[in-house]
Image (cartoon, rainbow, N blue to C red):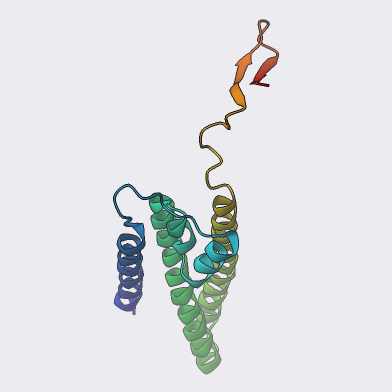
Length: 165
């Protein structure tokens, strides 16, 4: 049982690596074309971390993919242990089996919340990253400079914007 969970996790990580190598390569000198927000959101929903990978964030994709794969694998194991403990309790009526069932049930419920939170973060991050693509690029031609610096007293912040007419 434990080996099959590790196998599932390993297969997920290998698939993520293959996808990263496949989609992460661009022709030399080409800009990496970022997808639309809906495409990144859909890709992230289909496979954990794929939306981040399409946005060009390979490290973030690997971390999110690994975390989601771990949580999903752990959730599947807890679900199996919960059902087995309940079946044993129903057959024997022993309080020890009920205590084990209650423990696994609580862990399973917690893992469901964590999987939902990480998946929601992954979807939101992929969508926002796709929309903010190129935001940190060079300033438009009519802007000479933008600077932010602390004020003289240290309690203020100064913003300077130079525009050419």
